[in-house]
Image (cartoon, one colour):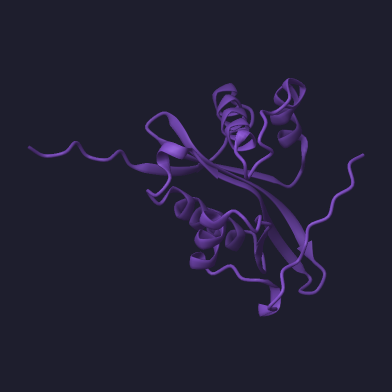
Length: 164
């Protein structure tokens, strides 16, 4: 007996005007937030209410969804920035998340490939991201995809923030 075919994963730009994509974005980011590598807590209700309009209103937002049939199984939220050292745009991957049931199936790699294509089309000199030291699966994915510490430095940068 043959196994049923695995549904194809399609990566596409999210439509931030469409309510279905808005719902998908909030659901995936809330899933990610609840994980230990997120914030180990759900997104606050007011954040869920403002999230999509905030992304839509931000002029450099790029959101990609990994779709399996009509289900979103992964997301990449990116923002265009600018490298003062290269005098060219860059693309920062702010969030990359894959639904737990879809991990290990190449969804993260497919999202990264689509992000890289978007960055190339925009003339970006590089893609950037931050990753927690204890997020071993993500670090392996990024390393395998060609990400490394800037300039090959043997140290890692720390990401600092001050809440306002």
